[in-house]
Image 1 (cartoon, rainbow over the protein chains, first blue to last red):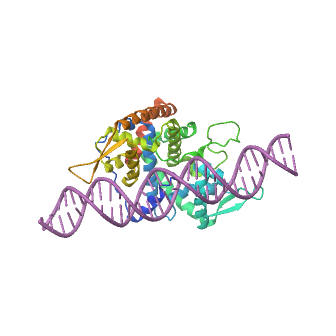
Image 2 (image 1 turned 45 degrees about the horizontal axis):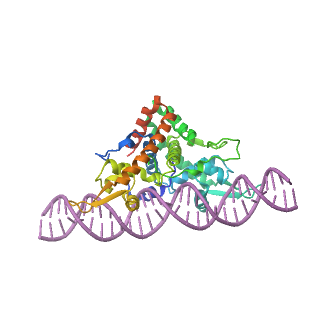
Length: 170
Length: 170
DNA sequence: GCAGAATAGTCGGAGCTAAAACTATCTACT
DNA sequence: AGTAGATAGTTTTAGCTCCGACTATTCTGC
C-alpha cells in the first residue's frame, strides 16, 4: 500500500465527496522546535503521502490499508500471519479482522498447515491477483508522483535514509 | 509528539533468531514493488521514529500524542481549537477529547473569547509549561538520535524533502 | 432587521491500532 | 514419556482517527 495506516477508512469514506480540499499553510503559527525536528516532518510527510495514495486509489473498492497485505501475500504465497504482520509492520492481532475480511471477499485463501497446525498458509485467489494488479497500477502512479516531488537527483539518497532510519532505530 | 500515530510493537524482533536485538526487515520476504516505493518506507521510518520517541519519553506520565499539542499551545497562547487542529494535522473533532483530558489534568486553560463566543482561547498553565519543558528535553534527545542516523551531511536536504512532500501533496 | 450562509466546537458511528490475556499446538529437555 | 516453555492465532480492551450530523454563534446581503 505504499503506506497502510488505518486512517484509511476515513479517507475511503470521503470517496463520495469528489475532490479533496486544498490545505492552507496555516499561517502565523509558531511551531517552536517542532519546525526543525525530523520526526515531526516525517509524520507530516507520511500523512500527506498516505492521503494522496488514498485519493489515487479511491475508485477501487478496497481500503488502501489492505493493499500491502495483498501485495505481500501475492509475493509470498504460503506466508503465515505472524510473518506477514512483521513484514507489514503491524501487530498480528490487527491482522485477524483484516484477513477475515479479505477471506470473506474471496480475495485470499487460508489453509491450515499439515506440519504445524497452529499456522495458516495464506495465498491469493485469482480475484485477489486481479485486484492486486489494479491496485499496483494506482500505487505506481502515486509513487511516480512522489518521485517527481523528490526529484531523480535525490531519490536514491532519500530512500536510503528512510531505510536507515527504519533499520537503525530500535 | 514529534510523531504521533501509534503503530509500533509489531516490529519488535523475534528472539529465536540468532542474538540480535534489532528488528530485522524480516528475512526471506519478497516485498515486490514495495521494496522501492518511497511511500512504504516513509511509513516504516515514521513508525520506527515514533516508537523510539515513545521509548525516550516513557518515564513521563503523558501520552506522546499530546506533546505536539502542548508545544503548539505553549508557543501560540490564545490559539483556537480549529487553528490548533490545522497546525497539528489532525481533525478538530479529534482534539475535543484530547483537550478535555489536558484540561482535566490542569495543564491547559480554555476560555471563551468575548468577541466571538464560539471560539475557545487555549493556553498553558504553569504546570503545562513545566511538563512541556520536560517533554522538550526528551524530544531533543530523540531528534539528536535521528540526526546522528541521517548524518549532518544530508540532514538539511532530507528535512527539506520531507517538507516538500508535505506541502506539495495537498 | 432578518433569512441564509459560514464558522467554532461537540457528539456519534465506524475503522484501525496495539497490548495483554487466552487457547491450541508444537518443541525441548529431563 | 511427560512437563515446561515457546509459538500461532484470536479475543478483549482501550485509544486514536476520521467523517458527518448537530448546536450555537457570527457574518453577509437584501
